[in-house]
Length: 270
Image (cartoon, rainbow, N blue to C red):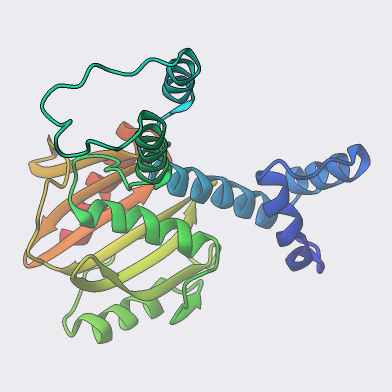
């Protein structure tokens, strides 16, 4: 079910994902709508995934409260560490001033969030998951939306300047597919977004780029090598066909996504 007013729910859904909907009646009505509307359900899932992805990209600040308390306790007791080799450098610096400087330095260094690596993986992996989520949220411009996979094949031929075997991604004429140019790290390519079996998946196709880092764990399937990574609840599968690199991103179980990638690779190669 999709209501005409669905676009008006997006702001409410964002607030719901953030836990900011407090009114019980408003909350019950919104959750009932999400359960009954496929469009809003997928939007809510994508918003939740994006929030988790962004949150995981930053390290939490270190708790400095206990250290602050210990310094304050020592100041109140009127004691200071015994001087060693530095008294000549700061002969008139009072312990209270030194403690204040220390506290300020701790505040600056620990309250400044530093990005942390989600996994030791290629930038291609992180870029693929980010573009998949952003595309589901409707935040990336699309070149094409259609139910005709032949139209997508023609679009791919134009974008990649070569014929590309595109295996069936969804039942013909039943599911919308969207396509857009994509840039993963430094690799120029294409992205196809489609809903299959109740899940959204992205298929990226690009000329083989220079790859830094690992694309994932090597898995042999049906006579072909695949590279599999789990990142923020998504399974990312890479494989090579001729001079192209393929990448499949979906939120299903690893074996299920890998099996689909293997079937797709065999069909498109044939």
